[in-house]
Each structure stands twice: as C-alpha cells, then as structure tokens.
Length: 247
Image 1 (spheres, rainbow, N blue to C red):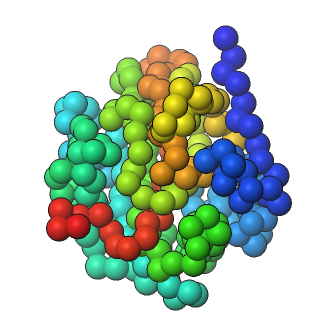
Image 2: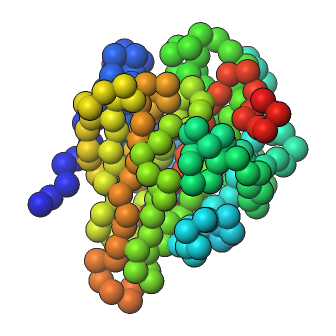
Image 3: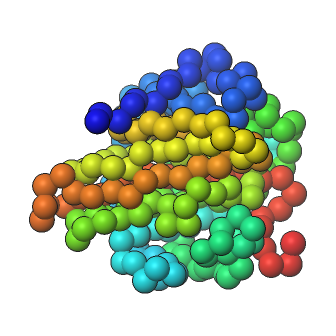
C-alpha cells in the first residue's frame, strides 16, 4: 500500500492550522518563502549531513543513528549560540533516553554560521511566538541521519512521544533508498491522529508539543546492500529555559 502524502498547509493558513489541529506540514517552497530564502539556500546546507557523528547513547545498543547538537537563545532579533551543553529530557517525555545528560558533538561552525541557518531559526521562532506569545526562546537543533544500510533504522526508538517543549519542527532533508519512515501524529488526549510519509526535501512538519504526540516508523533499504538513510533536522522551541535535571 502506498503511504499517504502529507496534508500540506498553505503558508497563509499555517498559524491557524497549528492552533486548530496542533500540527501543520509545509511544502519546501513554503519553507523557503517563509524564511525569505533564495533558491538553493536550503540545499546548500545538505552536505553537513555527511559529517554527523555516531550517537553513543542509544539504549537499544543500535549503531544506526548519527547526529550533532546545538543550542541557541533568541530574544527579539538577537540570536545567541550558547556554550555547548548536553541534551536532557525527563523520563516523562522520553522513557528510553530520559533522565540522563547526553553529550553530542556540536554543530559544525560552518553550519551554524550559514545565513540560511539563522533564517530558519528566527522564522520558526516567530511561529512559536504566534502560538504562545512573544517569548525568549530556548532553541535546540538536532541534525540526524538514520542509517538503515545494515538492515533497520529507527528514527524514534522511544516510540510515540512528546519532547517537553512548546514547538517542534521536523524538516526532512532527504531520503535515500528507503521504504518505511511513516510519520504519525496523534492527539495527546485522545485517539485521533494522522499518518503520512514526508518525501520532499526541506518540507517541514510543525507540532504543538503540548497537544500532540509523534513518531516515525522504522526504515529499511529498498535495495539491499546499497546505502539507505533518512536525514532530518529537528528544531525545538521552549519557553523559560532549556530542559535539565535542575529544572
């Protein structure tokens, strides 16, 4: 069965859709338009996914995930990269990997200093502010590669979850030689949900993390023995501070 395509939202309807349903999906052209970027600006970031490092914290002993991590604070127009810090989630939001400090390799400087990078963060922060009101936003950035070349890769080994933030943005950077990887979004307080497969590079899924849970199904190669992987960029926006054991 062919997976259903994502239900795309027109850019003009994005904030209303996010408030009404708790999620919205933007086509790549809408992401580009929203961020005020020229053609090719986002694709210019793609080579950085060839330089991700192995995730050493997977509690299922997997070797299928590579990533880096960066943290930023945005107040008004001022975007500040913070000193490198661990990623932390409580067990209430991540039963598999919660409750521990996970130190990942920092973002490559060339990535964090790219003008398109700043535009992405400030653009999606503006939507977070329209959802929650103007805030100082604590932003975490996670470029991921889930590698299924050796068999199966799990984009969300923790299963359906929330992240403990205000807004989650998942940008699909690319898919290579894959089947699977279906996105599932469910109402956090009821049975209603949707499922679809994101395939367009630099399309984006926005999630009101207080209202919905989300997951992505495992991936497998279409052609055995050939490279098979799914690249994404996950951005989270949180009020009040970064998550940490002291919070």
